[in-house]
Image (cartoon, rainbow, N blue to C red; front, side):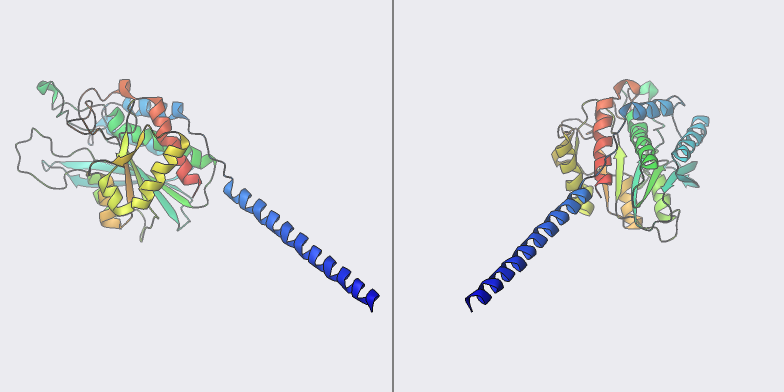
Length: 333
């Protein structure tokens, strides 16, 4: 009897040992798989490229609808997106300005993996303001501005991101849209009767006439005035109302990536921008990453809607902070 009991005990010990080793191996393997899933290769945002894309836009002159510079810039943007592998649609529209002028607007849409239904929308406006209504020189109020920050900077950052997406494919679809006629709103010196919704005419048109039937995107991110040296980006109030979780995610990503001096973890203003109309007409929750200066009279910096909005105020460090943060968010989805 004694011998038989001893053998059984040995057998039980062997079974238990085998079970424990098996469980430990499985746990180790699961941990390795989990670590492999967590490890993500994030592309490096090239601020030099983004800066060049901004400079090339500004070189055309003010990109005001119904001008030659506007036509040339639209072709440049379309060709850039195509060169990065995007399927490009130029949505042409006739929109009515505050003064009843008909504007020949062009929304430029670059689709990556257009066959995918699961999509993310990135957007900025590419036109520049036809008025310098905040300029100190009243004699120049009716002259169009370069719009290096207000217009070209958001587009420049998104062009570099589009280049990276083209080189390192994401598992979901991405649409990069450059909206037109955002900055043709009623100037402060106008004596015409007030009209609502005179800003963001391109996004209003797209919202009512999307480039694809039943268009869907998980969320949208708008870049506006993201190139000035020392710029700060606060949590925009409308963005918090429609996509607070995404706002927090972007800001926390920026802080963890080392850009907390740009992305301030505090509430900013409520700003009427393209994201309002994308959400209003398409129901897409959107976040506006936009320069905000709490102590400024305009909230956007002294250059805003003046002839000082030139390449002289564009800073590669700011472009890097915004672009790298956005890449981190996208490639960790």
